[in-house]
Image (cartoon, rainbow, N blue to C red; front, side):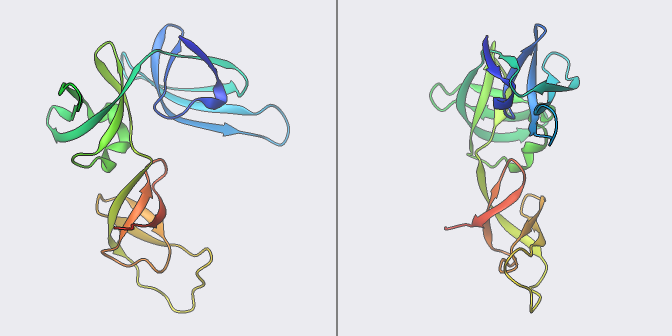
Length: 189
């Protein structure tokens, strides 16, 4: 086990809390104007799927469990779950929709992801930071809008809603951040 400070915990990390393994779902640092900064961590217990919310002081030490992180290629989804293959050994692993959570909308055929493996089981997934998707539907440009900070709603090819700048129209390929579903830039392809 490795001890790390709470403020360095990220989504997808595996923590050992009281001898049980937890996958971090969200981690946010809060710096109130008065008092000590804290890190709010939402986790899911691997053994039974129970969700837990913990608060640590940012300088507090937490234990990261030893897991093997390796790159895998997403193959397909079926009734059993989501199938991934290790490109080096051709071993296949299956993860359930509950294990992947809300990140499943960004999975694309052939996408390389990092799986955290503990005792032969895939327990957490880390997607690439950015994915390229197509805008399916968006509002038309309104004349007179400034280009500074006005964003308009759009629906992506995977069904996710996001906000895009006014110059983006339907059928445009854009780069989206997987962490918060936000627009990054127009795709260069």
